[in-house]
Amino acid sequence: RQFIENGIIPEKIVILPHGVDTSVYYPQPHVNKPLPEFIFLFVGGFAIPGDRKGADMLAAAFAEEFGHHESVRLILKINTIYNPQFDCVSYIRQITKNHPKITIITENYNQQQLAHLYNMSDVHVMPTRGEAFSMNIAESMACNKTAIVTNYSGHLDYCLPEFTFLIRLAKFV
Image (cartoon, rainbow, N blue to C red):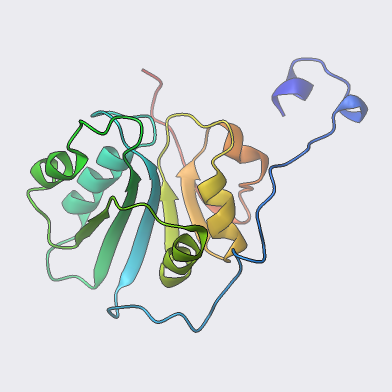
């Protein structure tokens, strides 16, 4: 879209998307959930407060919106590789007042474990401030999960409004 809006002839544009391994990431309708809750899932890195992926922003919004006894859960599958010294678990616990419906996973997962996690969730949420592609959104969508994503950045190449809920940005900082 950006190329066309900036004068590139559409016929000259070819999109070569990243591939998702559909032998791993596919709908598995019989995956059992651990609890009968509506599960919001975030998968991504979190290296500093205010990280561009938005895990802290999502956790704070979840804690504000949902009470302790509602039948919902937020699972944050966080990759800590970018700043192993940052204690993201303590930080999220602090900003959410240790909300009991937020589960934080920092262990490394292989592809099969990630596919299982995608399939046991109900939606994948990614309130990112900027992405090049966001493979995790594509993988969760391959598992037939609805994505709730920011209406900005590289993932809009495949996160079309008819298949996703787009989060409108209030402003850029």
